[in-house]
Length: 336
Image (cartoon, rainbow, N blue to C red; front, top):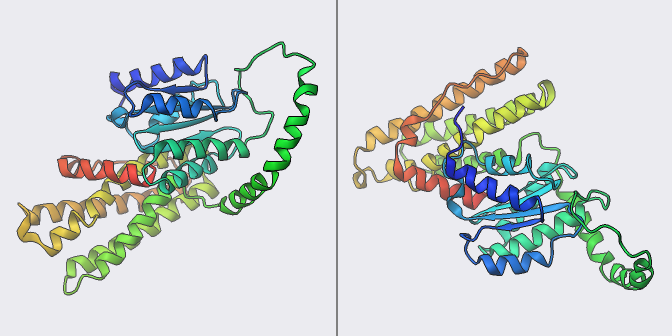
């Protein structure tokens, strides 16, 4: 397995060290670090239940899969919920509420914020706090509280609760309606949805057999991805699902970048504007077929109750610098 570079470890170590004594770490290299520090300090609960980490966009360079920074910080942080911003990419994980719900809250606020990271983080903290049980605090927090304090502040708390109860109730109702039993992980679902959007684009290209074949291939891939995770959810252990998510989060992101309008679709419609268009087209088509074949093999392995095997590398796509740029943009715009 690929390992983290020393720079990745430095980001993680700095964040985890800060979270041992507090609930907020904003890297000095993050844009608007001081403003984020001030804004977030006022909304993070004081019970040690939620940690927020803000890192610059290049902190995830060299990671093996999309949520690896989040996973590595979460496994070492004392807080039970971690909200992570890497550039504009907002992520969250939790052991006290459903992890998919935490990630979905982060993704929805990222998409709704129109690039305003501070607003997205503040709303994510607020919504996850509303979902978190009151007894789920971590190790931080003051001891030896004054026994008279509840009586002093009790009236204020009752008034505040009365003023906010309706809003919190409506938020919880909206969130419960949004919670899904979808066996496909949230990050994978985003990629499947994008594949289906692209399928329609290829199907609409007139007079191109390659575009028509690509549309059919994309449709098959999206369907097989869903089948893999449906069957993993029903027949396999959680470790196999996590393994498949790590494998395909990265590979599907690369495929989406290669299939996007600015690459393969443009190659098919304006090959005169590209160098070596036939070679590039062949690379993407081979990658699409290879990933689909591997997923079908994985489905067969799940059905046979055997371990998943992964052999596709997508080396040809990794070698294209323009695809690395577009892949990063896709990850940032989709939350994964």
